[in-house]
Length: 485
Image (cartoon, rainbow, N blue to C red; front, side, top):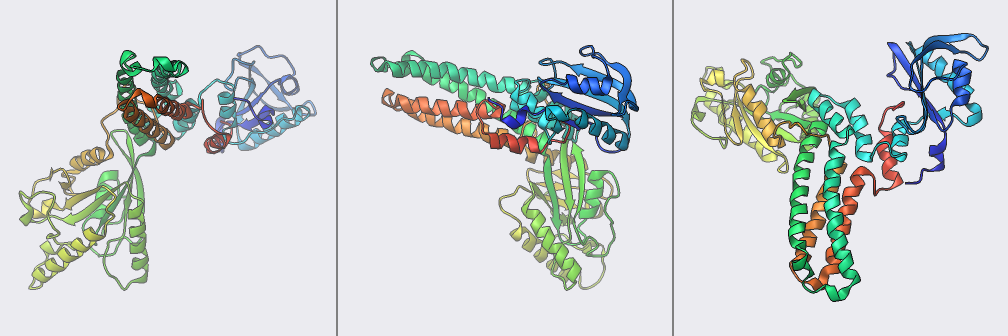
């Protein structure tokens, strides 16, 4: 892939995170850094050897003392000459060092690197493919240990190798088809003689496995957006606290305590979850609470999974997840008085109204809370969980149900990280091969259409590793990296 002229400029940046630290790194990459090395270090550096020396200022004084490392091309991260200056990690020291590097490299056009530009150079110089380059950012951004391990596997090429296995099978099948198209007299019985249908079936099976594995990897990267919904006082905030293992939300018996969303990141079996507590859904004359309820409905539209909470009562013993809102939405099971039946009816009506308005295109798990007050055991069915957020009964059942809804099958030794872009490419490749299968079932007269679908499938898979792709896609991907990486 030819590099644009802009990518030929030497670049420099502070490669460590902003703020104070024990060590800070200024990284430089370009085709020839001898000018910068001489100006800052005053000597030739042995390749790939850490050298302790003073970093020289323009007037010959010392800016800082640290380690200098020179990685000559092509044996470097970017494939170009790379210089790393490791000094004391104060922000002022690092900024002075970067300014000195830029000044020393002015004659060779040295400039400040853009976000992700070092890794972009590595991609353009064939040090990494595109999936590996994306894994660099995913490793930095990993929110769980499992996500970090999977990103590391992608960086080492696990995902790319799996893609290439399928691509190689496609290429072999395409070679047979293209050769036959060049000799029309050979088309007769080609599909039978070459076992083209069998080869295609094997490629499709391999691709289906890869797509399933990529979905797991995408879940590790993207996580799950879980929104709690229900009437006031059904225990949404208590449930958030129970899942988080900390008192992150205020819990009181006063209806309407939660006025705005509360967001908490947690992890379950290495899968990151963002759990959102929301205002209780009801009719209200309180303007602040009304705004909070509007925001609740907006949040529900963004959810990956909705937990619809209600309060369990004794009438649910032995019933399944289809139980209507017969429980007291405001804790009325603990209230004495002649209006209990009326309040139960109102609570059931409110709960049914909420259920009717929930988005139909989202997975919804019914959660019946306060089983401790109802004298019920914690349990779970396919679409419901009975638990007590207050004493923790059934919380593990809820965690397992969330993983099931997410499609999580557990972390394997070869699991890799994946992005939505990868999933889209894999799905499109599957569609192309499905179309090829249809053509293969008809006759050899549509062999050219069969060949075209194979080509398109290979193109979709090639976009994952960057063999096929546009410059604007690269711009979007690398712009989301941190500066210095």
